[in-house]
Length: 252
Image (cartoon, rainbow, N blue to C red; front, side, top):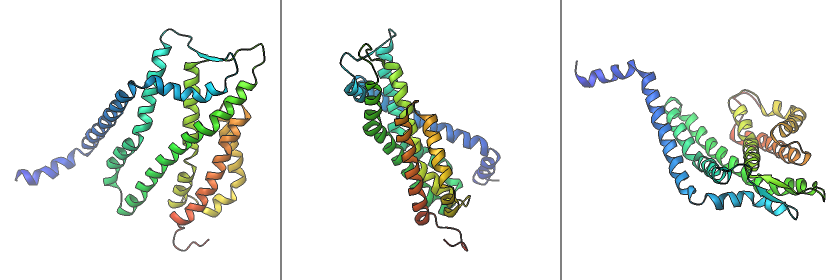
């Protein structure tokens, strides 16, 4: 038997190993891209943190300031922010590598559908982060700063602040994925637009519960997260009628 004839047989004997090797290669590519972006952000890590802290700095009352409670914190926190920012920037490339890994196992119709969904999900995640930075942060920081009395100086630890804003970024980025989830549920036949619309009261209650769990214990941030979830749920129902029509034989 020739070597050309035996190659497919040898390949078929180790499909799992081949997939693992490909997955490792794509994971290394993702790490390399994140590393390159991180190296570029390393030189602007301090201005990057100052831009992130600006919403709080603008809301601080007279005498309020940000502090570092540990010796290495002023160096490590901007470094940590640069690493997280590099990951956020690299998300489109990471999702592309994930797509390239699973695409060979998809049908042509699924390929045409999945790629727009991935692109839309990335865009919505970024929009959620922008919404958090420009709308949510100024409101909640102004509210928090206004609760300090005359005999209290507001001094926020920079490490705690970074953890706080990263949690909100993830929460609002994930919340803005609701239209994608809604469309996928209808597209895959798990549910219908009519069934989702009938569960609207439960979705509204669930949105406020999610807002309570994913945001700090204040009413403002909870409402600012719950309302977009509800609005995006309604948008998902609307778009599902255009992008994910009901199966054959089912009418609106």
